[in-house]
Image (cartoon, rainbow, N blue to C red; front, side, top):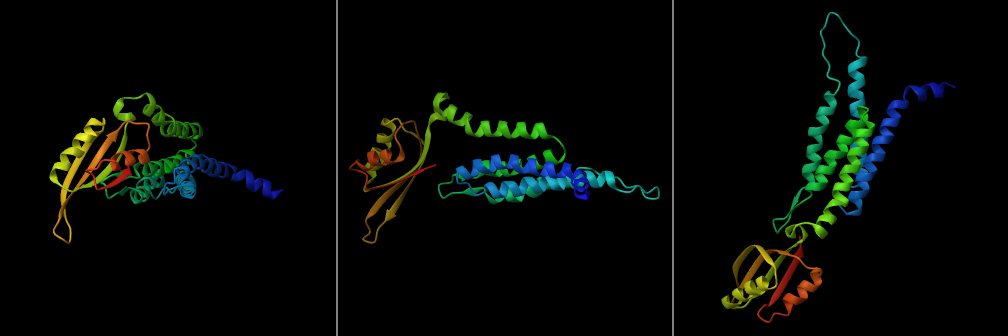
Length: 239
């Protein structure tokens, strides 16, 4: 029966580690479903070890042997405070800047920080608060954004695209601009540069960031642009 006594002594930390891991599963699965770089395994590791370090930090402060000759002040959450700054390095590693100046990975970085927060909260004994936080975050990520794209303001319902087209003469630049404006496309930014070919023929490349409200997918949008005779080549990317 000694093992029952042993288990009873350590039941609190066992429960906390398992509870932190289960809550982090929700975040990890959500990231995995979206094919993000930080997924199931990373979330579990962050939350579980954050919980462990928080528990150790609290227990070490209260179990330290008192010595009247030495005045020692211990902060029960000193280790937990260092977890937050340490997780920042992981978060920075998933923030990427694409060639079209689009920055991705901010939500994933925030979820990494959140997984650490779950571990700290569970380790400190805030079970209901940590579970409620996970529910709020998942609702905020999975429910509210799709809802806003249906019934929200016009700008929130728009899709962002990166469009690069090649035209043969300067007159076609204005035609491209007028065509997009007439199609209800909002041009966020535009860049025009000359492309000099081997035979000294000059082409004009137009790079644009667009906002478009349409039920058509990127393939249909590409087909519409490609049909314009004044456009020689098309490159479309969803942002």
